[in-house]
Length: 122
Image (cartoon, rainbow, N blue to C red; front, side, top):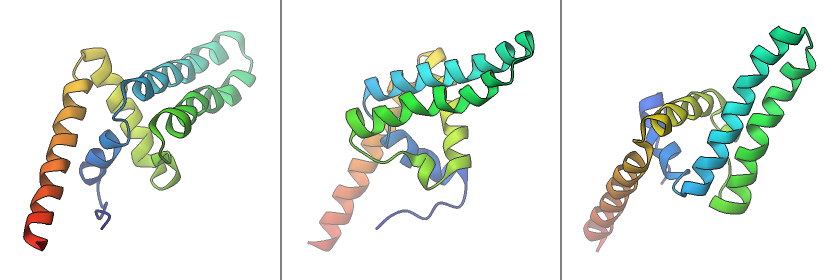
């Protein structure tokens, strides 16, 4: 059964599990940084095309990684605002060097929870 998502705190474990592969996180990092760079480029050049390119540069690599590396559907499709916040939290954690440990923690908790559910059902 899918968890009920009523807050970002509910969403985060789902988001972290959906980004379990390091290559997926790397593509997100690149896309998010490129998208963020579009804002100063637009301001500096007065060219609004940079703003239009931001979402394409951000979501393009991220969605590619979900479909072809992670093998799942982007969280953006079901929870766009929480997903955007998750992108920035993940970017920050990657810059701090803590995201790999966070994914391991969340995946471990999920695995333990599933094992407990199966034991109860047996």
